[in-house]
Length: 361
Ligand SMILES: [Zn+2]
Ligand SMILES: [Zn+2]
Image (cartoon, rainbow, N blue to C red; front, side):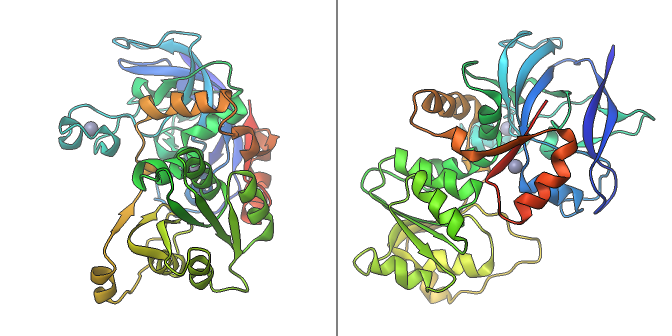
């Protein structure tokens, strides 16, 4: 059986997203069909529709989603119709060289559904980040559907599937922020704000938020920033040093991904500090640093892939923190909209007006 549902599709490079009827097949072996309840609008969706990721149009956009399992395919265990899930774009395979060495959060062969979702004329759709959840129903690999507490409202819960997890994990998993650490976060959009929240929850003592937008700095304080630096008028490296007795921070997180912010993060670290790169750079970006500084300052330069998360471990944990009132996922939801509002949400995101617009289905 197949299902005809409404969905937001990027048909060709740079063209506005179209709401169309698509065809979603029933789940094959190892797959699950999910009725999507809410899906956040992320920068990556915009990158897909601009052709900045690859050329495999048409794309079914959307990848920060929560919903309920509608049907499970052959051989699926641990999931049943009615289960409440958050979708993940990492579903560890269990067999690649990284999984076999006990590091499934780096899985090099993450699973996706094999059966294609299509346009009405049969043209196969490419799901954004292997998902595609701006749709009333979507088909994913079973490992991509992570069961969480159904008490979490879907608009908030879905955000754990991408931006919140990436930022939180950049601080907690990649940066290993611990009690008493000092942390700086450059770029306080959704990912940066989540990094601040994660750092605060893990006991960071001083958290400096850096941005060029005063509105984002105000919001950063709500997520746990102890200090803010507006880098339009101030050298952020000097400002962070001044706030840390001249030393710099233990962990500096670049949530922007420009050469300038990378360099700032590099130099605002204390000796032996850690730089975490989580902002996604464009393919043509290069950065130049004196190698002697890389050597003599010590420490680590780490990139954070999806917050180095293990969805089955981390999603339920973050949702529980939300339900216990420790992690304010609701504060990331700036507005809710519909499938027809995706283009408008892209524009608002581009202007920096929202942390997240969330499509409710
Ligand atoms: Zn995303
Ligand atoms: Zn693997």
